[in-house]
Image (tube, rainbow, N blue to C red):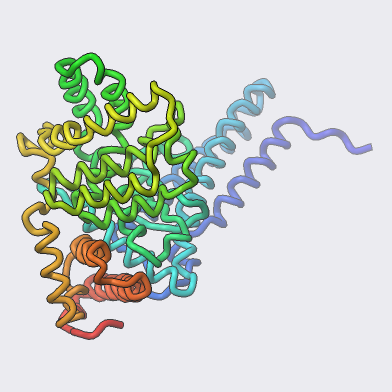
Length: 431
């Protein structure tokens, strides 16, 4: 009969197996195939590769140290101590693989037909959305997944094992590619979460909203408590409206157009305002940043689609108070002066003079005579022009889809050639 192996032999074999598996994990540039125009931006790719290589090297050093200890001084240690040290290494090994998988899904999609080019174009739009005066912004990567809701894993938030992410990762629902302005609204909302983190907006706004609410009548207190609870999502909606104008609100309406029971339902613990009031607040934010009768018209349309009738008395009062305080909250947010902006108001980070409804409409007139102009504009401005044209009834959904496809493709191409030190922007033709 063969003797049962001792603890040292067993753990030595396990350690060698982990080292062998770890050696098989290669950098993405060695095994992911994609068109050059679909590739990640160089800063994003380098940030991810460096992060993962450092994690693998650190784990490899720990495995080598454990192996030497196990066959040396640790050979006489109690088996449970040998096992305890190995288990901590295996936990770290799993963390490293999980981190790899987190980025692999996003990068592998770059090899999909058409999808890779669109994602590269979205990366360009996302970088434009993150531009802040005097503040360094992190690399950003877009990818697709199932479901209706977009999401973001912000840069420097914790990955498996507690390591900070080297990039922001924005998830876009597959169903939103690329048929409507909803893609821009979702992208800019998620980028708004990263902007809020960079400016540390939510803590400072919590303080200001709480202080403001104390001066308001007592019957408004329930509404202001809810506004405080929803601030993180409200700030992201503000960023989207501030960059896109009416296109943001129309995109939001498309996302939250659900059966009536869900639109009028408040869910305990949900960080999002419930859909009915969220759209009304979006209109109020737009009217503060870009005053125009269109916002009241969209609010009336939303009321026609989802009339707030048939509610019990308590909800009727709460809904009315929330609706009444929307303009107050919008003005408070626009005028907020976070320390990171050095006494500038939050509204100052948005191009409010350049993206009024009337000016966007005139820019669309220019696009009709010079289609190539749209490709030469900053991506968020291009999306804002399209959103205004859609709201004005001048751009059909079928045409919008074609234009968005062309824009994403051109942005992907331009970013690729820019990385090589040349440009295509002098061309008036679209791909």
